[in-house]
Length: 217
Image: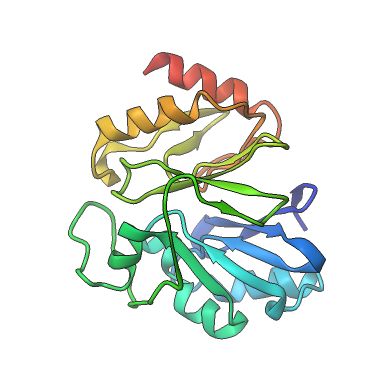
């Protein structure tokens, strides 16, 4: 079990990736990203060990379209009956309408996203998440921020690298200069915990790492 912060679980998925399971009101949960194809089995094993029924996952929040984040989406929707959320640009690419032709692997299965998000939207998850549009890695990339608890879920805007944060890697990034602008924007937030998808997480001291990175850009 890996509940890294109260109400925040760091859940093993396929091939060394991890997704985040976060608490909602009344005992329900939301999942942030869904891992590569094949991730449903390890996610289901974690839920079983934690005695969390799949039906308690009511929402799936997607940071972006890449296959390592959407590979388990179709199967997890069938398993949980959860509603899906993504930026309106990413929602089109996740539905393959049109197919994505940028760097990084596109989704395997076309999935119609239930709710299309935009910058500044709020979600009643983990006591309140604010949606930040953070383009760069992909055009409609999102980060999620919990202001009261100073938690940032940056998706692939940042990667954990050893004990530090780095900016999204250029070979999988749509537009690195846009990612730098996005990094400076979220760098203005009051952050203590930074929970990236790759590397980390940094439940303590993440804000200091974030500020060091942004100062170097």
